[in-house]
Image (cartoon, rainbow over all chains, first blue to last red; front, top):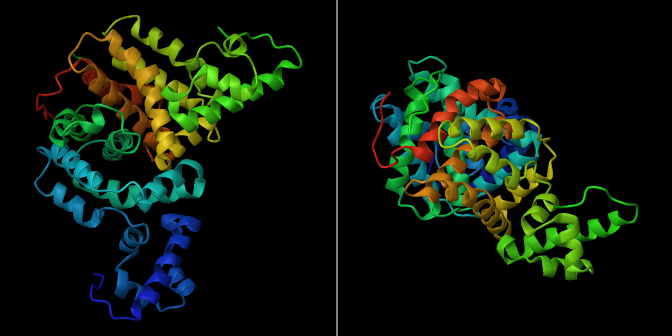
Length: 201
Length: 201
């Protein structure tokens, strides 16, 4: 667990670690980056990196200023079980995004992934490990990874249309109405029959 | 309709029009840009813009090098009626994206919308007019615009995850399997009950 009390003088070291982490993640991807290599670039002992930022995943969350911590959020969503999980995931996602400012570095991360192969790799590896890996480990269904991918596709698209290009009326629709409309999609992707051609109106 | 036969010497004029169009759309948005203003910037008569590129919408499609023409694709998808429309839309969308190169200018358009307010406005206005407007005009359901917004959210997210960051196994799943998994979502958004809490497995 990262320390929260910070003495004067520590901030320069922490900033050097965060800068080295960003460079490492962007340069070699999430899987390729190591705490040891990041510590070396920052000129500190790896133990200090762990001391300040915990493990590699949490260092990524801090370095990229993610608006959420998958290690906290995902277990909380999964804990009550499969029933209503679509609704819980959708509501949590909308709540987090509703608090993200337009100039949040996280938006830059998504933007980078659209043009730079390395950024796309980094984002893909992190999403796969930290988010999709946790969800699929908890699901007792066939094709758990494809299911988690499909959920990601709906939620990322929802963020883009509602919060980034802000198409109307979606952008102004109350959160709970969006939850009601989208949660059945997320629930079906996670627990429904994906191979059945179900085009009921 | 734009001319297709192009004599030598015309290409410089056409390029000047396209450059002026890109600047106008980016600068004042899709709604704010006019064929007259674009012609003035390019130093040509508005009639020549219409002659080469048809109306404003088609000029946008050409200037932004969109991989599809909504004026052609959307009526074709809507023509057979509401039955199976989710499947037709999803299949067409995946087919178009499957042919888009990573360095397509269209990707730059999406990227721009993530950081620049003006680009977001331009994309929102175009999507609203040229795509959502056509779909909602053909749907005899309540909340047609919100429904079209929700479809856009799913399809844009599908493009991002499958073709841009390429998460697996979604990126490698055969198109028809993705159609089977996603089409019921699109169908439900367009014709289903959006207010019912339907969390069946």
